[in-house]
Image 1 (cartoon, rainbow, N blue to C red):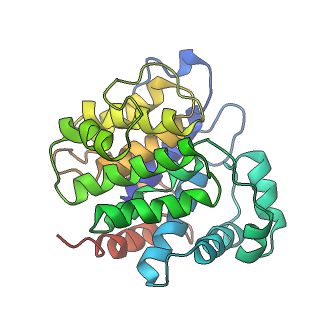
Image 2: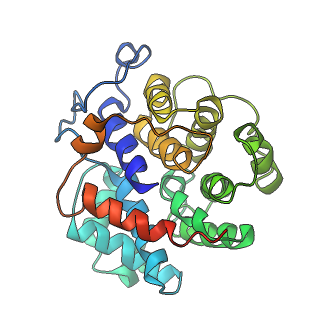
Length: 280
């Protein structure tokens, strides 16, 4: 899950909110740099870093609490500062001292996709009720709104649906509708994706239900345009959990993913420990 999520994030970050002529006919290639923001090719963003924080808490066995989540978010950023965060949240993370300071100062009123981008790891828990409860808890830290929470729960349930073989890919929208009502999950997402929670979750769902190869999912996430890295991270993280999806990501992208302290090998090890939490 985490390696594929990071590959989707790092690859599609080069196309985030670029001109449509760079995305609408996109074909998969090597990692690239964003035309405006630059940065090293193959480097993941906040989508992966925050997913790492959630995954590390899960595998640690420590209580899944607001305090421990906040500590994880701050520690993950402080040990490995990187761009990709919304500018205001980036400055917020730079300024807070620890998890307690985070909780004291955060204003969690956003309906954007921050809670959803990091939710997939919670899908490893065996009970749907636990997935919903813990995803809601982590979303509320920063996105305590109906949209922010529901989008996050939907992403975690997508991963859970595949990890526990609860149905076929074409049944995923109906599954979400039964647990996250009030959102048109069955309607395909068309066009560019903005930064709202429902937009990212619905776009990723459309891609996952429509494609049976990770390369096609990654290509489609870029072709939609807009918030490409979040959609690609969710789609590839979730899609990699499905037995119906072929993991055909080229070695160029696997080996080209950043290889520093918190890079490819770190993600592989954390992924292994996270997947060991799945109990069929």
